[in-house]
Length: 184
Image (cartoon, rainbow, N blue to C red; front, top):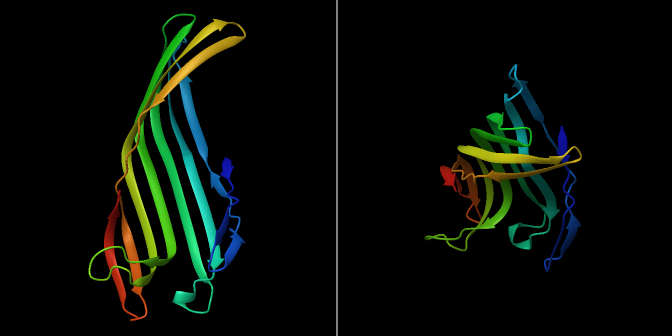
């Protein structure tokens, strides 16, 4: 298990100058692999979190009222990769892994509508979205001597389409809208 712990500061003219609430995000990692009897092939499966973040603030936002507003953002990216490697000779090994990536993003807090008839209108926004996409990596390593091995890996860019639900409470009219959303 790996853990991402964010320590962020935020300052603006409203006046806000604060640190985010510290929220560690444990990132699990699990792998299983096997070698062939002759030791030339290795295959396995890895499941692990590639990245994650979390920030949470209570901030002044006079336009939305006298109380402090909650701002929060959370993101996580994990991969499930079956892979195979082959030892070409005593010095060179190559490998490939192709599988699925999963991404989840949440954010909430005051927001100003950006387009359409309500552009500029203040709203409280709560968004949650999740997506799955193909992902993969290639790699090779070369053993120069008993003490030195060089390696290089290429990881393909993973592009997600996140689908989820967004809730927007428009102010000051007090209307509340709930709609499905997509985010790329």
